[in-house]
Amino acid sequence: MRRTLVAGNWKMHGSLAENQTRLNTLANADLVSEKVQVAVFPTFPYIGQCKSVLGESGIQFGAQNVSEYAGGAYTGEVSADMLMDFGCELAIIGHSERRAIFGESNQQVAEKFIAAQNSGLIPVLCVGETLEERESGDTTTVVAGQIQAVIDEAGISAFSDAVIAYEPVWAIGTGKTATPEQAQEVHAAIRAQLAELDAEIAQSVQILYGGSVKPNNAADIFAQPDVDGALVGGASLAAEDFIQICQAAA
View 1 (cartoon, one colour):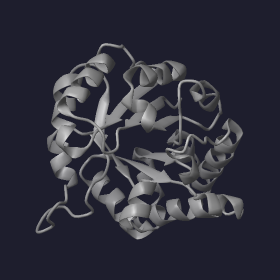
View 2 (cartoon, rainbow, N blue to C red):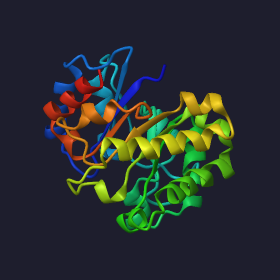
View 3 (cartoon, rainbow, N blue to C red):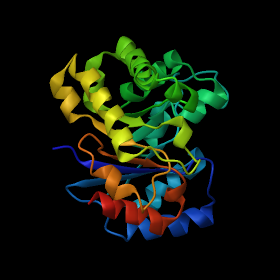
View 4 (cartoon, helix red, strand yellow):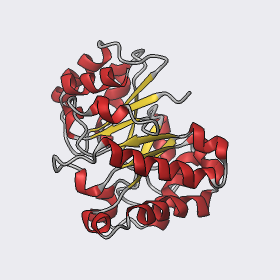
């Protein structure tokens, strides 16, 4: 049975003081169970703070990005081994903001996925379509292509130790949310794509939904059979909202 994973992507927000309050609240909320897995993704400077505060809470933490390079003369980059040094367990790969703003291609995303996994991190592969692509009826094609790029480089077996996050670009930070039925349709298509190559992996992989997930819509989204949790953006910055989303997952 797949656990429900609720992951908070803090994006480029936070300070030592803000994070301390947020992390203390989460650590004391008893959120993790046999059914529910919880993780937070701070910016790089605050990973050590997460390690210190979360302690034995069971809440995991990870990075919002990782370099495709293992090391060397790559100023400004952070390698997967460095993240492992700080106790990270997961890394977000190919978030739409990385693709759109920083020009990450499907090929580069695949290379980052492999680099993360080779060092022992669990990649959280983000896929999703723009509003124009959805209105053109290309959602399934676009999402399938983003996943296939990783399969081509890493093989289907790589998804036995990875997470997929479907995030329609048009619903990220806009207040718009895919209906539970729309989310389920894409999640089912993703699982079917994987099942064509390996049915066991397709059934075991966690597929999260991301895009304006809030306490008032989380339960309906989680109720869908192929939705295994959420990658939460803005609502993860408010500890009480994030806690309510985790409780909806339970």
